[in-house]
Image 1 (cartoon, rainbow, N blue to C red):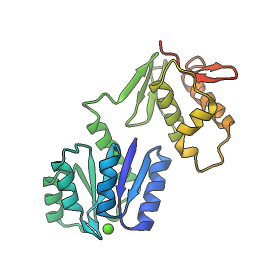
Image 2: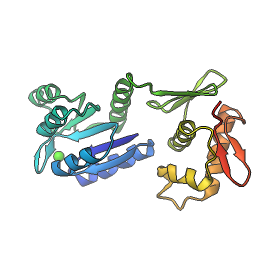
Image 3: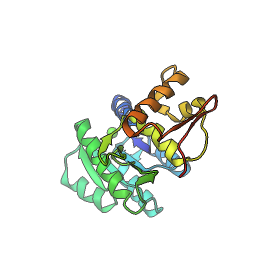
Image 4: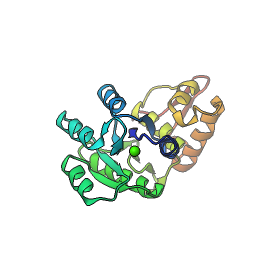
Length: 221
Ligand code: CA
C-alpha cells in the first residue's frame, strides 16, 4: 500500500512516515501543494493524508482540485484548527475523514485502516489462494486453522508479494527487494529465510515451497 503524506512540518512528517513505514506502508512525503500535485499526477496512491495548512496554498483547494480531476482515493485531512467551518468545508470538498492536531498516532492508524477497508470494498481487499486468506487492509491472515492472525509488517509484505505472484520462483534477493521495510538495514538474504520460516509456522510448512538454490514459490493451485 502506497500513501501520500502532505505535511509541511518536517518533524511531524518524519515521525509519521516512520510510524507508517513500520506498519508496512510505503510513504511519499510532500511539503508543498505543488509537490503534492506533481506526485499525485505521476504516482498511484491508495490513500492521502493531507494537512490543510500548507505554506504555498490551501489544502482545501488542493482537495477540491483532486476530486474534480476524478481522484477517488480516500483522503484523511489533518488540521491544526479545531474549527467546525474547516471540517464542514473539508468534508464538502471531498475529505473522507478528519483528524485535528495534535492527534494520537494510534487514532490516526485506526482511521487510516478504516478508510482503506471502506475504500477497498469495491475491489476485493482479501487475497485468497490455496486456503489462505490475506486481508490487505488489516494485515491479518487466515489459514487452515480458520483463525485470523495479525502479521508483522515484513511478514505481511512478503506473503502479499508471494500471493500476488503465485507459481513463480522468487530468489531471496528479489524478495528482499520487495521488503522495503528492510531496505534501511543492511539486509541479508537469510532474513528472507527467517520470515519464510515464521509464515510456515503460522500457516503450515507447505504454504511456501523451497526451490533449492533458486528461491521460494507460493504454489498457484
Ligand atoms: Ca501545516
